[in-house]
Image (tube, rainbow, N blue to C red; front, side, top):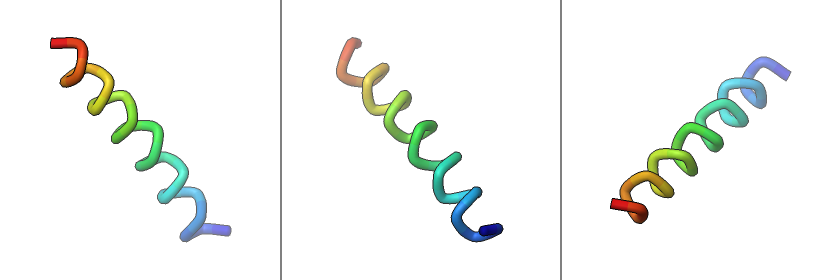
Amino acid sequence: EMPRKPKATVVPVVEIAHEGSSSI
């Protein structure tokens, strides 16, 4: 469960950063 938690947190952060770059 520990390795899965960090992966799930990294996924949303990367998606948000991608959306911000596309908006610019």
